[in-house]
Amino acid sequence: MASSDDVEVEPAGAFAGEPDGLDRLWTPHRMAYIGGQDKPADDAPGDGCPFCRIPTLPDEQGLVVHRGEVAYVVMNLYPYNSGHLLVCPYRHVADYTELTEAEVQEVAALTRTAMRVVRQVMTPDGFNLGMNQGQVAGAGIQAHLHQHVVPRWGGDANFLPIVARTRALPALLGDTRAALADAWPVTTKG
Picture 1 (cartoon, rainbow, N blue to C red):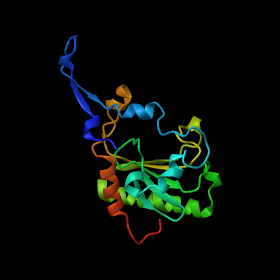
Picture 2: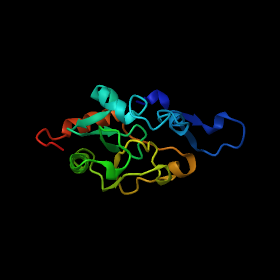
Picture 3: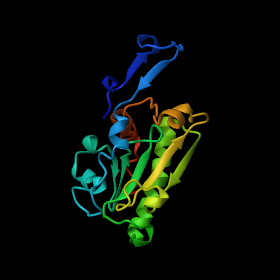
Picture 4: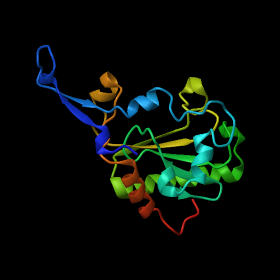
């Protein structure tokens, strides 16, 4: 989990050149993701796959929001937006067509509940939902299927991702995980 120590504001006037009046926001923890940290070395199930490893960890450490019978909900370690969740089957399976009926049903139910909980806690204006199937489709971890639940707000896109390959997130992952886990309904299976 990133801390405030991971972000530095660097004054432009401290360096040679013409000061432009802009501060520089540095988020060096993002370089780990860009460099491939936490990505599996191969497609095998087990400890090398983060989506196989996460359920073996305590919820706070693994950023698990909710555990179902055949699938679970986890914070995205490299989120597109605050509250970005992943719904993953426990079973190491790559393709949506390979899911069992129970997995399809629970992934769908957990996705619906995730949207309801995020709406309650974070009041987004909308969502992006999706599964990237295969590397060419954008799957960062293609061997273990995962459904993205990305909350969106009007005006949430800014210049940082475009020009700086950086996202500014207003809340720590652990704090967001705790708020969403606390709001997760106890009476539902999914």
